[in-house]
Image (cartoon, rainbow, N blue to C red; front, side, top):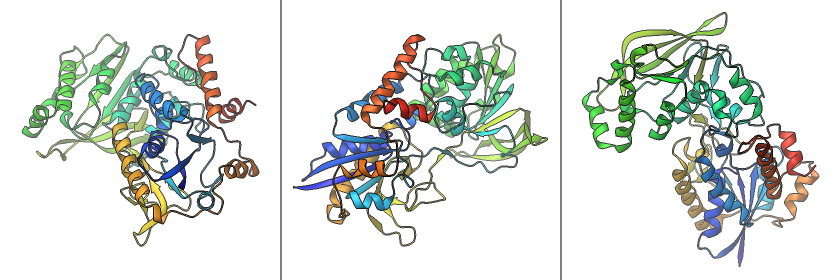
Length: 456
């Protein structure tokens, strides 16, 4: 029987789902899968891209853990593609590769002043408060008034973490260094800006509701944003999710803080709709204000500018306008869209737009940073289906033995981590948490993660 030796680069949901689907698929060949991950721990953005106060994410991690713990997928963590292992290496040892490296960089926001000191990308901030090992351990939280640009779930996560009182994060797995810095934050006002109106936002009702549940934080909305046109009314009437979002926002309008009236809370979270970013103002090179143009609905779900310019004094700004993929060495990449060019997961060449045999993509590096976990599963299914049907065009590896990969990594001095090592690190973090009455305390430094995983 034919054997498929498959490499998957990226051990987040996209990579793990692809492995699981292939192992469960009806096929006329045996499958052996090696999963490569640049971090010492698996799960990707589920571990390092979601705020620590989202306990429902643990359900997703449990599902991913069940797949890995079956024992039919090998995990090689702390292995960087393009450095520790290359595309030529994969061709030498495997029949095909699926890239599932996601999108972890911030998309650009091209307005004047965006590079001023105190202007940050949301993805970097999320990586910091999630204890990502490759970002600095400190963060300059010294602003009293902060602007967050974006109307998606990441913008709400960032806003919630900025406005929330640090002690309310203690039951979660927030890293110790993150807690200490959040506890010292002088923030009083967080302003969230979105170009569109309340009926056209990208965040989900659950994320929005969580904002209104923050202790000692007033929600501030503005009556002028709720003068709905017919297209907005139609969206509310026809879409249950939009209807729920509107219901939540309308309930906040009835609170005493509407239109910036003083409330009793020590912090305020303001939602500004119909606000198109124009400029980040700076004083001495540091963020001092935000300038935006008031927009209005165009009647078709979009917006147009009104010419009315407004300003707000702030001391820091976060752009949460989307994630962007990163290029991989020797792999085609679309610089404009931040993805690997592909047709339903089959990777295409840069110049001729022809299929590259043996190379596939899934997840956000395939389709861009849109959709939730359910999209990732259907995405992986499409890619896996093509991989199975392409059997005649797979690579013919010179050395497909499973023993070759550990030997190769060892010869290069790579301190890789395996599934047993992840269990060791997982148990260590849970034990740290138990001593403090918490679910977990993340180990942040990469070397320490590797030492614990390898039993060193």
